[in-house]
Each structure stands twice: as C-alpha cells, then as structure tokens.
Amino acid sequence: MNLPQNARPIDILLAEDSPGDVRLTKEALKEAKIHNRLHVANDGVEALAFLRKEGPYADAPTPDLILLDLNMPRKDGREVLGEVKTDDDLKRIPVVILTTSEAEQDIVKTYDLHANCYITKPVDLDQFMEVVRKIEDFWLCVVKLPTTACVVA
Figure 1: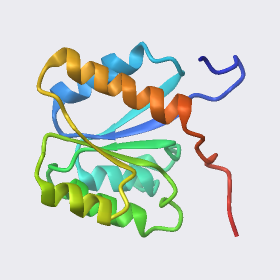
Figure 2 (figure 1 turned 180 degrees about the vertical axis):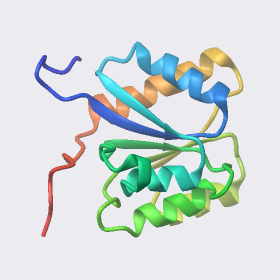
Figure 3 (figure 1 turned 135 degrees about the vertical axis):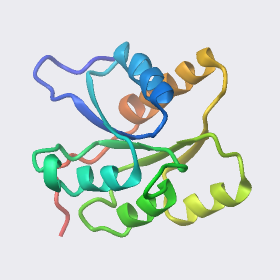
Figure 4 (figure 1 turned 120 degrees about the vertical axis):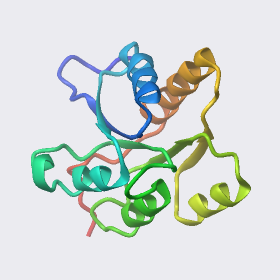
C-alpha cells in the first residue's frame, strides 16, 4: 500500500540514544511501504524541543508518530511521555514505546501515562528489523491517524 504521488510523507520522531538502534530503525524504514521522514532525537530534552518547535527545531514538522525509548539521558522516556500526553497540542500523536525494558512496572507506568503501545526491542537483528516493519505496517498502513492540521474545538 503506497501513498499517492501527491500525498505528503509520514513524519516519524524517533527518540533514541543508541546509535545502533537508530541505524537499524532507519534501515527498516528505508524499505517502508509508506514514504516517511524519520527525525531523530538523541535524548528526552531534544525530543521535547523538537515536538515544541524550540530552538533549532523551529521549523520541525509535527510528527504523525513517535517511537520512544524509555532509558535516555537528560530526560527519560517516561518523562517525555508524561509531558506529551498532557500537552493539548501533542497529546493526539500516537506514542509507541520501543525499549529494552521488560519490567512490569515500566509497562504499567507507560500505559498509565497513555502510551499507545509498548514493544520490547528484540536483541536479534532480524527480529528488530521485523518489529520496526510491523510498527510501520500497523501504525502507518492500518490505523487511521488524525492529520496534524486537524484542530478539534
């Protein structure tokens, strides 16, 4: 399922501090069914600056989907998630937690903070690539997302 020629690409914000996981995610999305633009934030502070269009991110697009690691420096994913889901301008953006943590308290906490789903990163390279492809298939091909220009009164 490809977007029509004139359709805009899907913007994805990946908040991830592991260069290896960033590289793998880029590779998996490069072959995506839907044209996408991946934007990378290396920590939680940078992710929030991107989302709020602060500083060097003044012209950043509002992402259609956020892939969020939990264990990042400066501000962790739980804090980022909490701020995103309580911000009227950001709370409708789907947030997929993509992390190495299998801890039950992390799963419960992120759902309490209104994460849209929680996925534990596989250690195996091929499985990691497949997980990213499945995220893309579900969130960008199956699910109907609100357009960023949509404002609900």
